[in-house]
Length: 216
Ligand code: AP5
Ligand code: ZN
Image (cartoon, rainbow, N blue to C red; front, side, top):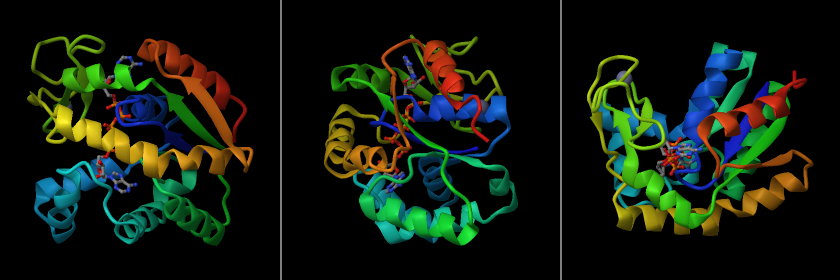
């Protein structure tokens, strides 16, 4: 199964991708997670990416496309993949198409998680992430069993560096301008499925699962 999860920042792409990955055993490829790992490790890529991420801007297309290409060619991507946070611009989508052509594989579906802007803001203010394993929680909608502690690894839960209101507003603006055109791009390729993401996590998950049943 080869799918893309799309949607504005905070739509629940990462949350749903992790659940799909556990259920179907397909690797989640999250460009946001990969960039945050590079930032934490202090690599050259991390230093460059941080300048953009802290401002709520997109990392340049050629940088991100190079990382995804490398990742997709790793062995486990042959089983399929769930792309989370990529592509985010038309040039990224065109590059992905070329990479997949070279690999002689095709996309099965592009799932667009739809959530109104005003709902998104509340998701960011309550989001907490594990500083060790990156698992995501929400103080109200998806709380950990023990406050401030990751259920999965016992790591400390912290706020994400780019989750302050000003940066969040910027990220949503960037989404509207640069990423939203991808909705029509994939609609024209008959790959798009819209999912109402303004419902509880489990309900959204059930609908996505139902949609993917029967995909190879
Ligand atoms: P990235 O990490 O991809 O951030 P994003 O797209 O802004 O998305 P988020 O991770 O914020 O949200 P999400 O949709 O995954 O929601 P989540 O599941 O966490 O990118 C970060 C930065 O990296 C970018 O700004 C850019 O600089 C750079 N970057 C990354 N990819 C790039 C690319 N391809 N090109 C260029 N630059 C790139 O959920 C949010 C919260 O809501 C959580 O607390 C969660 O528990 C809660 N929640 C989830 N679902 C529900 C629900 N149904 N109901 C209630 N609460 C929910
Ligand atoms: Zn953890």
